[in-house]
Amino acid sequence: MYCGIDLGSRNVKIALMDEEGRLEFFKFDTIAFYREHGRLEEGQLAVDLSALLPAGTKPRAVVSTGYGRQTVALKGARVIPEIKAHVLGAVHLTGLSDFTLLDLGGQDSKVALVRGGRLMDFQTNDKCAASTGRYLENMAAVLNISLDELSRHHQNPVDLSSTCAIFGETELIGKVLEGHPIGSLAAGVNYTIFKRIRPMLMRLFSDTLVFTGGVAQNAALREILAKELGVRVVVPENPQYTGAVGCCVEAKMGSEK
Amino acid sequence: MKSRRVGITTTVPVEVIYAAGCIPVDLNNVFITDPNPGGLVEEAELAGYPRNVCAWIKGLYSTVLRHRDIRTLVAVTQGDCSNTHALMETLELIGVEVIPFAYPFDRDRDLLALQIEKLMDRFGVDWAAVNRARGRLDQIRRKVWEIDRLTWQENLVGGWDNHLFQVNCSDFKGDPDAFEREVDDFLARLKGAEPRREKIRLAYIGVPPIMDDLYDYLEERGARVVYNETQRQFTLPFETGDLVERYRLYSYPYGIFYRLEDITREVERRRVHGVIHYAQSFCFRQIEDLIVRQRLKLPILTLEGDKPNRLDARTRMRLDAFIEMLQ
Image 1 (cartoon, helix red, strand yellow):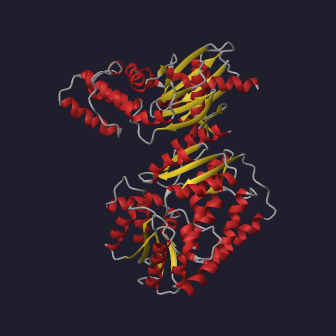
Image 2 (cartoon, rainbow over the protein chains, first blue to last red):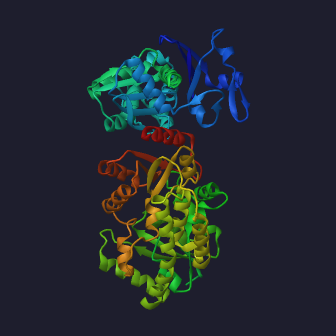
């Protein structure tokens, strides 16, 4: 049994992988996870995994990644860079080895070029959450619809700029006041995400795009990517656990060395 | 001349300032070594400098405001940054004497010679005095070139020390004799030192970083900067005694294609594995990244720095991934 932990900005994702490669997933709210399960021991975050995971789970190795790795090392876990974790997870979950990886998470967007199963080059968003889950949540709240509803629309988008997440809200309210239908407004929001990440995708282009992270659950965005870029868009099952799965892969490889 | 201490906004022919018996002060170095450089940036914003303007310019503005003994400023109006124009104007507003200096974009020798001679007129010095100053400063520069050589050829020097000694050659810390003693002490300490073991060799190109923990962070992860492009240029690493030619060969104020000739030569010579291209937030040089990426055949990480003076979590994550990628 191997354990991978992705300390994300919104959620902590944990994946367990057994010797046959079968996976189990667990998700916790990040703030609650740190507050309820973490304590600081000698400058490291100690988490009692036994309280979080099914009784009797004894992982042979624990590997972690994510934003948390910058401030706290998880006690007893080996830490790997986030982009590496996502590439390993994407390769494992899709069986592909030549693709462009697009990972849209809670606050980050990452684009990585993968050739022969290895990371060749990558780019990340600048300091703004205008292409991420946080942005979609805010925009859904402005429109007073659920994220699921927001994720259904890509036809007749209203034109919104993609400069800043906060200005985006102001613009969207302006469009609401102009009387556009909810479908066009939602499509406009989904298109701003595409506009924002398009330069990164063009710089690291492949015919196949593996789309991971929580935002990969947005069906409209998957449609937009396929249509606008003319690429095959592959979304693994449970895309938000890709980083955690990558950590499991790393844990397993480390144990087999 | 309003004051003996003369501020400079970037490297200028300091030989002229020293020949006049004045003390050049590289405002960038004063700003970034302040105990609270972030506070200086905020001060400029309170005065009315926009939030989305380079932090260096804001730091320079507040630095001059704080240092009442610097009432004269040599400002580079071409070959560095157009924000300097507004910096000059806002400082003139408070009574600072501003002397403009322009590097010709096309490296034209006649235009550059004219600029240097106009600067000499302002300071009331002749070529004999300027060349005497050059001879003295070159003695120190040669020693700093040696620190650079020991960095990449002998692997005895870390990225931060390489950065620091070279960057200080913009003004020789206002006291060439004292600075030379520092250089001598450092070189003496290297005698018999063990070569460093970092496996990954990096180039750092672009303006010097606004965060001072970059080099240590990289070295903790097994990667060492063995080439600091701009900092090295501040040492004028050219053997010619002709001062005008010196500042023509100096690459920083000229176009990216001329800079790339130097960069390409050095990354090859120093057997570099990857390149960090640093650009300041809101800087025109961010545009040049696309040219760098097309011309350099090495893995490149583009870093953006905004406020002083620590690496943020995002940048650390990106550095980690880059080092991982190079292994």
